[in-house]
Image 1: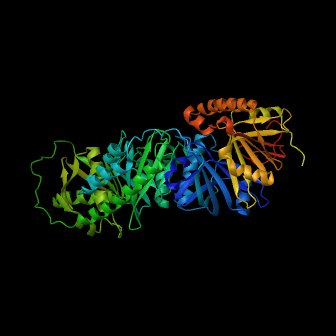
Image 2 (image 1 turned 120 degrees about the vertical axis):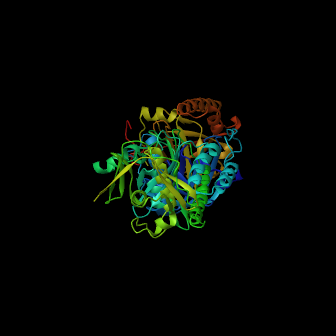
Image 3 (image 1 turned 45 degrees about the vertical axis):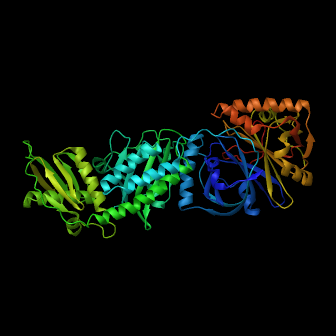
Length: 444
Length: 162
């Protein structure tokens, strides 16, 4: 037997092979139980799922010492952990993270109606030993995650505006980490939801689609500010059905479809947090079971930390540069076409082009102001600073995410190809390009 | 303590390619675990021997010498059907040539059981590996039997046909 470090055997905790737990009562009568879930917390702690009030439960409350056996599913190596029960958590980040993972495991093993997390039992690991010295060789690693992370970090660091940063993170995930389905969502503090600003790997980008706080993997990750990783498909955390069920008819009319996979078998949502403030969520998924490992989670948490810092810097840097020379777009004549009717609903700032919903909320308010100023004053050049000060837009005071909302607006306009576009002309400056006659209707 | 009666279906289940885990407890209250690699059950269910590798079962053997207490869980990975036996009269026994055949048959059956749910044979055989001269028996008379299949009856005394 040889001593091993807990953070080097995390693949044993993916639930591929159930862990075995031995406990004993006060009289020393042993008991064996099988565990669907072991969660790595740090190098000295793990958490076990508490699902039933059973003999194991009675025993650890009477005698906190237990023995856990785990197996590496790739090599067959067995590890024996001497552990000691410390406490049970029934809410918060650890609990929510384990609850989501358990839902995936339960669904995978046909125990959806049976497995429910009552608590996360936290144990200290007092000793960890390798039981046998033999093991089959592990399969060749498909990549070096740490090396990939470095390249991603360098590529992100080279981005000089948010628009580029959003695209670059999607490209990095695909090219360097082999993650081909991903989304970036920003947090709207005032509305209490998250809106998609970038995606990769879907037929429709879904830019502008929204997720409520607490809804599904993304919403729980945002609410609890903790990564949520699910290794098997589960209806409990799936998006396609749950979202539609929660919306009213009028809301459905303004719904931009969420772009997720119809059959997502692995999901990982990582909150983007900087200075203790939730900026958004980075979400990845796969049609393959067990696609994302603890290492992938570490990589995305690290990248999200960098994203948070860089978003913060770029939001503020956008105000710093002098205004460029105004270059009116005289060359582009408005298209000879029937006028496009643009309606604005003041209640929620939703904007419709013809009968088609375009956008709502702060981005809707911004667009409406731009179009009004263009129609009444003939303006085409605008700055972020003036939008921040414009009383018509009512930006939230703290961390307004204005730049991210402008990126979202520009992408929605581009996708709609409706004859109105926004072009960046410099840091903190942009131009409104109207290629078609517009008729503006305010609906109160 | 009277013995619980194990029915023919339960005995057949224990003899099949199911996962077998053995727990003991030291005088100081520290539980120990070892994976068993085969099982011999008398036809009337009154005597059970589980086989373990000598080198991986040192602590378990020490506890059994000290207090005879043992808990053994049998679980079928594909169905989660699980039962647990307990006793306080366990002893360590030498293994015979016939026992080696029981273990070899068990390994083949377990490889087939978990192979069907996607585990590589090479890995599974590694998990069950034991040099022939290292095989040790842990023999006991079951005094309590419980069903432990996940669900509302988990933890209840084992009933006939369960």
